[in-house]
Image (tube, rainbow over all chains, first blue to last red):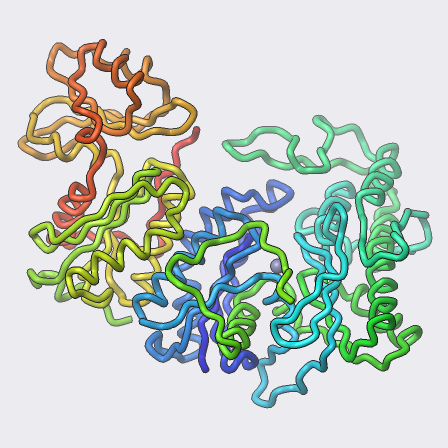
Length: 369
Length: 228
Ligand SMILES: [Zn+2]
C-alpha cells in the first residue's frame, strides 16, 4: 500500500511517499525558517502564503524521489488539524483534489496522531521491531506538550498536557529573551553546550498528582533574571512576539542586547534543564504507574539531544517496567508528511477514510479512544 | 509530467473555472459554449463545499477531472482563506492530471459582463467591515483595460472617484447602503443579483487565455494580496 502524505499545518510544506505505514520512500520538507526568522516566530499569514507556492514542487519532488507515478498511489493522506487554519486549507484542498482526480481514497489525519506514528517509520530495507502496546508517548513540539497513552492502533487516551505554553514555545520565548534567534530549541541547545545548568536556580512546576505541565512561571522567572543584564532596547521585546517595530505589513523582531560577558551559556543551560526535568521525571512516573511496554518520544522538541539523554538516564535509573524507549529518526520528529502517510495506512486498515466534505480543524485534539 | 498543453486546442476539452474570492463562490465548465455553472453561498465553508460542487458539475457533463484542458482560478482580490481553498483545489488538479492553470483577476471578471458598454466600469468586492476593494476598467471594443489599480476604501471614497461626465457603471459586491451612496454620485448601479460577478465571466476570460495558450506557472501562481 503506497500512500502520498501532505502536511501544511504550520510553517513546513511537506510531502512524502510511505509504503505500508512504515517504509519511507521519500520525505520532502520545504522549510520556511528563513521567512519567519526576521519576525522571531511563525507569522501565520506568511506561512499560509508560502504553502500556496511550495505545494506543487514539494509534491512533485516527493513522487520523483520515490520513483512513484501518481497513478500508482493507493490513497492520499493529509493533515486535518490541529494547526493554522490558513495553512491547513492549502494542503487539505490540494490533497482532496488529487484524491478526487486520481479516484483514490482521501484520508484526513490528526497531526498529533501522526507525530506518534513517526515511531513506526524507517528508511532502511528492513523494518525495526514494532512498538509494544501499551505505549506512553511524550509529544513535545512548538504547539504541544502532552502525555498520551496508546493502548492499540487508533486507541489514544490523553493523560495530561501543558496548562499554558508548549515546551517548544517555552524554548522559543527563552531564546528570544537571550537574543539567541528562532527557532528557539536548537538555538538554546547550542548555546547551552558549555553552560552549567546549576549556575542559576529556575523554578519547575511539578503539578504533583497530575500528568500536566506548566512553563509560564519559568518564562517569567527568566524575564526577571535577564532584565538587569541586558542593555535597554527600544521597544522592549514582548514575550508574545507582538511588539517591535513595524516593517512592512508584518512586524520585525528586534532582539535584546547583552554585554559580551553576560553568562548566556549558563542561562541557556539552566533554562533548558528547567524545561526538560519535569518532562522526563513525569514521563517515567506515568510509565511506572501505567505499566507500559514502550515509552516513545514525538514532536519537534524530541530532536533536542539533552531531552533524549535525560529521558534515557531517567528510564535506566527509575523505570520499573523494563519499558523500551523509542525515539523516531530526527527528520521524522519535526513536522513532516511521512508521519501523516504512516498514520493514514493504519487508519485505512481500520476502515477510516474521508469524503469530499472533509474540513480542517485548527483546534483538533487527540480524544479518540 | 505528461502535460496536455499540446492538445489544448482540441475544441471539445473543457475548461473548469473556480472562484472562491468571497462568500459567494462559483464554478463553471466551458468548452467554447457554457456547459454548466454553479454559484452558491459558501460563507466560510469553501473547504467543505467546493469539491462536491465541482463533482456535480463534472458528473452532470459525464466528465472526469482527467478530461479537463485547463483549470482557471480566481486570484482575487478577495478573502485570503477563501482564495487559498480555490488555489489548493486548482493546484491539486494540476498535480494529479497535469492540467495547466490560468489565474483570473476577480475584479476583471466582475467588470467583464459590462465590457460591451464602452464606458468606465468600476468593479468592486467586499473587503469586510463595510469596506470595499475596487479598480477602474475601461472597455475598448469589448476588451477590458485596468486604468487604476485595486485600492481599498469605503463607499464614499469610491463615490468621490466618479467625476467623469461619461457614463460609469459600478458592478460587484455592494450592500444596499453602498449602492445608494454610489448611485447618488451619478454612477449606474445594476440590480443586486445582476451586479455580482458570475461564474460564466471567469469561464469566458479563462477560455480566451486557454485559446491563446497563455498559462500561468503552476508553482508560482498565487493570490493577489492587497494590504488592508
Ligand atoms: Zn507538529
